[in-house]
Each structure stands twice: as structure tokens, then as C-alpha cells.
Image 1 (cartoon, rainbow, N blue to C red):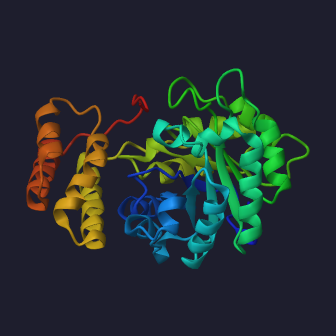
Image 2: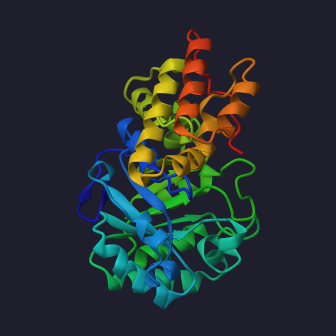
Length: 337
């Protein structure tokens, strides 16, 4: 698979862009465990052109990241063009346009998946960004707005026609948010459309190696994108790759193995932010997902989520590793809520 001149190999595995998730420390672990391509968190175009520090900080790129895209969102075409020019200066490998975020605070303002209600504007935005920068430009979107409005085959053609060089598709509509099952038949329809020449990346409900293989077989996509299932399980990428290569399922990780990775992610966050308290607070979303299905774990989970300082977190993690030294963490029955 190629994006522009960027050769990503056969069936690359993508870490989906996720707000408040795909920051440096989490990307570090996902790359360690085999994520081939990654994205920043969502960067708001208006904040970026106004030189807001948090927006600029999201674009910090580390060498381990590559290949990595900066993902931009916004509802104003001129602002998106200006933001793309600013993002290009950060030297990502490509720029991605967010046409798929379903969250109300974004979609209701005509950004993200909100652009699925104005396809001509979406296409024009893509066209103007492509013309404004030298880097390859890609996009991520959904099937459509709701069950009665799923124009993804037409949208994909039109985005390709204005210069988008790869398209990631989440197999749900905006109205579904993250409920119901992802519809990979429409992703397959895009991939198998004879007019389509650019790579298609499939996203949605890849919760383990077997599903990854099944969706790939069904759709024939050029790449697979993993989102929420990677939270608390960054090694899902190595599990998927191993299964695709060998047909073998990797044994579930031991609790001590998970604990060591949680500690590593926390330390990476502290090093990056130079603020241990803030790093602990931002890790809470991940803490909640790292230890599913452990017996009699409620009290330790509460303590972990209430901890405020690094030493306290590490003490609790050590206790977890000791108490569950012989346990393995089973992710097979997790619902991606």
C-alpha cells in the first residue's frame, strides 16, 4: 500500500486517531507492538491558526512515530487550508482530514461527520487543502449520516477525484455513533468499485485478530485500522499481525506483563509532559481498560482510578501484579462502548 510515495508495505495496520487517547505515550506503546501507521489526536483548524498552545502541542512528532499523520478538523474551508499549511511545517508524513468524528460538539458545528450533510462542501474542502500543501492528503469518514443516507461509494469517488490519496472508512453512520455493528459490506463496495484507484483502509469493530482477518477477507481493503479496541491493549497490533502471518492466536498476556506496560506508558507520559500529576489524570481512561475480567478486582480498580500521584499508582500496580501473578487478561468478551 502506498500513500503518495510513502510505501507502507502489504496490509499495514493503522492506529485510529482518537481524542485524548492517541497522544505520545500511547502511540509509543502501539508502535512498540506493531502499529504501522499512526495519527495525532484531532487538531482543530481554528485553534491551530490562532496559535493555541494545546493545538500546536498535539502536532509534536517523535521519530518513533513515523509514518504519522496530523489529523485536522474544522467547518470553514479557508481555516482548514491555513491550518494544513501550518501542519505541513511540523513535517508529518501526510495530512489527514477528519470527515468522520460523530461527537455532537464537532458534528453539530458542521465539522467531522457533520460534513456528511454537505458533501459538496466536504469535497471542496478536500480539494482546496490538496492544492495548498505539498504533502499527501488523506481523509477518514463514515458511511453517511444515517441509515437512509449512506453515500459512501459516491463520496469516495469524489474525494479521489479531487486528489485525496487514501481513504479510511468507519463502517457506521454518524447517527450510530459507536452502537450496533459496523457494516463492512459498504466498505467492500468502495474497495471493489472499479473507479477507485486509491488505497482504502477499513475501520470498525476490529476487536481481535480473528475479526481483523474476517473483515479483510470480506472487504479486500488495503489496510486495517484499529481504534477503541487498542485502548488498554496496545499489543493488539502484534496479535493481529501474528495471526495474519501464521493463523495462530497469541495467548492472552499475563497480568505482570500488562502492569509493566502500564508503568511504561505512565512514565512516557510523565517524561513528555514533565507533570506527573497531569500524566496520572490523563492515564485514567487507559487504567480503566487495562485489566478487564479480573476476579474480585473492583476495589483495586477504584483505587487505581482515584490515585493522584505516580508513587501511589505504582504501588497499586505492584499490588495488582502480585495478587494476580498467575492470571492472564482476557479481552475476548469486551464490548467497545
